[in-house]
Image (cartoon, rainbow, N blue to C red; front, top):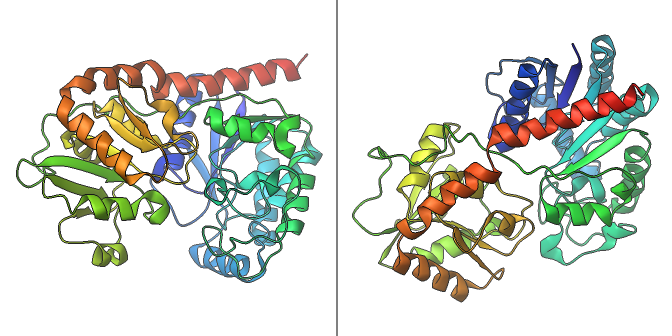
Length: 404
């Protein structure tokens, strides 16, 4: 039985954690044995063997180290060495990386092992951190230093991972050295936008295969019973969903939209701190790991609005489509790739006037004009069973070639 080790920040929690879990399920059906390596802060019960690299307190301390010394991914040496001992005992046939940032391991020690062992690597990129000297998303900064050499970073405290000093030049050189040291690695961007980024980076030397994210269509489907999440009154309902809200996710846009008396704005994923800042007109919902509850919100809404300024290929768009709800998104990263004129509207990033016009267009046409096409697109392109089978096909192809 071939053995796969998947490595990700979260265990069956959040969009990326659920993706890892679902890939593992499909892999198990095809005869693979999977172990999931993860951090300590984002945990849900998993049906697979797992290895937790560290504790919450150790992660917090590592986060402080990253903040003070711009050393993201370079702490936890002992914890990562212990992980490598366990990986050597498992003897994986493939190591599948996802987010290896997040304060839970040391990437240099991990890649020293991967290079020495020669084990084939699949690396699913959910953001751009692996190709830069500091940031995980650069699109909103109009910065292209990552193409050749990061240095003198001007956005150290703007977004995750934050730092008070600049070691972007050192980080870039170390990442390039580590990440290009393995001989057999396949890069899997989750969108064609990210594929184009990879092709301009030092990771361009490796084979690249785009595999879009998928969603569980049995959970995310049009729901009739939305009584416990329905908005107040009969206003046109605008939904926003995020796991971590900030201005780059469009908080200001939702505040402005809530000033229209004809709209009911609902924001899901709001923490207590943000809730106090938002106007009373917005219905605020705490973050939930219940996909059934999320599906009810998507189904109840007239439109899903995603005014994101930094994104790779948001799963929230797919979840809305699967629930029959049209999507409006800014032209950001890979966010527009899931949208067609039959399923929503793409507007220029930051153009609030155009965003309002798009909302009025869908309001005028009616949700029913889009719902069938939304569901059909989700079924055709974003069924998790189909997309995650692509990974298993990739595993098998890699193993077949390694035996030649």
